[in-house]
Length: 394
Image (cartoon, rainbow, N blue to C red):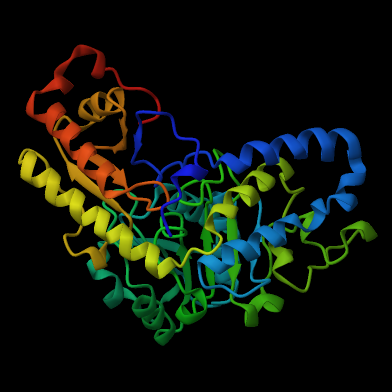
């Protein structure tokens, strides 16, 4: 059974449609954090690196994520932030493509990925260029000048989804390295990193994986490449034997070489506990239910609110696990919805986003949410002055 509402601590009266931005709190996390803080840290102190096996927690958590994205054991390192993992993957990928100077992405990619690419280009100062194109123009632009193709599989605004296998195949045919950002894919759609044959993938864990605000990111490296990947950030925890305290860097002979600093034990423990709710979940089945919920939502909203324009692909096979609608007064309308217990979010200039997570949403929630949206839009409740002030986080 996919529906596991009883495992989440969601406030009464709330329909949570924002798991694509921040997942809700799994109840098991509360107990786990208490144990880590009071028993492991409080009683064991520094001994807990061994007695609680803190040192191997990043790899253990990485293997649990790997099961959800079709990656083999040992191929995922966790820790740091998504931005750092993007930087690591891109820097390593460029070294694998000597003589080429183009990093190719799409103009809908999440800004941090593009910012990290721009920063890396400026740092190494070797004439690299970042080219961003419309998603539909990407494949034709993958030429022999392209060193790396770097894409987010599911667009954060519209939910549009790239064909991972087809684009990876096109990149490889042109001799380019492929990096996928799975921030809006992991825990939302069925991903098969092994089947895709892509060299790298990165992702965050605080969205569909429910790891909590600031939860550690992950990086995947195709297993046959790991011994040739040169970390741009050669951190202590990426050393082959960190406690040998050698002056020179010698990378671990595994994905562990992409660890940088001391792992955030409390956050990793939260994520580990959050992943318990995924035990026994089949991603293909989850994807089918997600499509069913999102299709129902689109039908219900369009029937009630002609003022809202679908901004996501209509074909469910071409979008992830979110639905976006464009509405001129989208920010104020979202604030009015949140005030009435239906929580989504907003992205400039006019996009109202709604995420569909079958672990804690059902068809009844979807219909109720659509009814509330119709009330807010149809009665122009968004026009209330209290909904016009914009917060820093939208």
